[in-house]
Figure 1 (cartoon, rainbow, N blue to C red):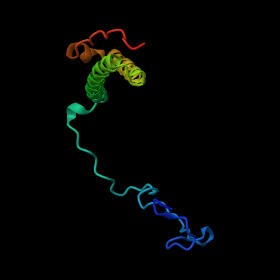
Figure 2 (figure 1 turned 180 degrees about the vertical axis):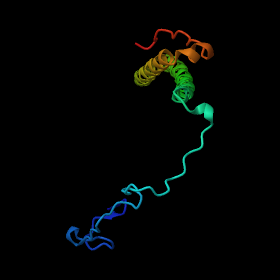
Figure 3 (figure 1 turned 135 degrees about the vertical axis):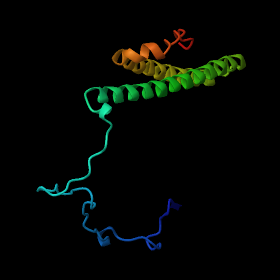
Figure 4 (figure 1 turned 60 degrees about the vertical axis):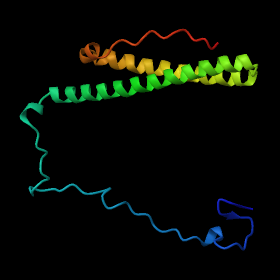
Length: 152
């Protein structure tokens, strides 16, 4: 039996006794524990920022851009889930017409999982919209009300 390079024979090439392994001493990588320079020597060059970015509005703008990005990503994922749900609904109808009870059961289970994912995404989107409401209301149209599940 040779599964994933493991042979059942003790004398197989590459097989060693556990006690004969060499365990090298592990050291941290060179950049992990670097001491901080102490003294008045030259420090690392500061990142040049435009004068307009300095101030309390800069993190807010960055947070807003990040929220916009995640809203787009989550909305895209929601659309993909809706497409998969449509496919499952069509497959359920086809399986019911063919009398395949096992397939119907499996497809309904998969559709329920997708509906739970959609509900989770809706919650995340709603929380993002409520927290970053100033631009979200102007840019994002409201989600279409989702139909009640036909999978029960």
